Length: 199
Image (cartoon, rainbow, N blue to C red):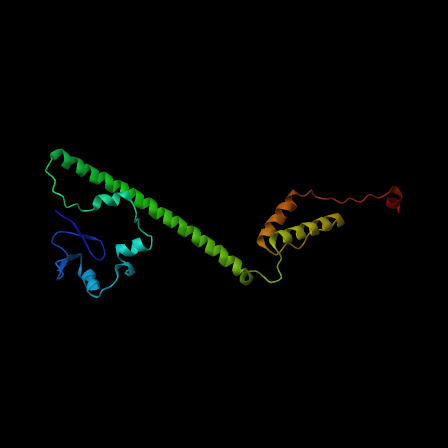
């Protein structure tokens, strides 16, 4: 059983399926379905049709250069039948298919990883360029804001006042609460002399 390859989309043409077109110069073109045949008659370029194998290779989505593809080339050489050679060839076909599948999977994962990095970089660039739309115009930077709040807390603790107002952001609020829990409590006691108590 011989499996042919579609001339347009490079998919498999199974026996009893597809369309065969013979040109005036006796060149044979095999197509898997009428869609490919119609595209060929319209002289469409397979690399520009997104659903073809040629487009995927042209855009770098599929593996193009690999030693396993050399085994698929048809060799028009008559070979004398040898049972051992036949068995070894069948075993080698399975092993070659396994190696090629593994390499294709690695290639796809590498391409997807690069896409993830590109999307992350694009998101960071977008946040950096349009932060003024999200952030209030008079807001200061987070670290400067925390330093300002810490200085204000130190001043109020020195004066013996309680901190009533908390920072503007949620992060600052959480950090202030943590600082306040760690800070020692100040207890003020008043001592009176005996003469003042008698009066």
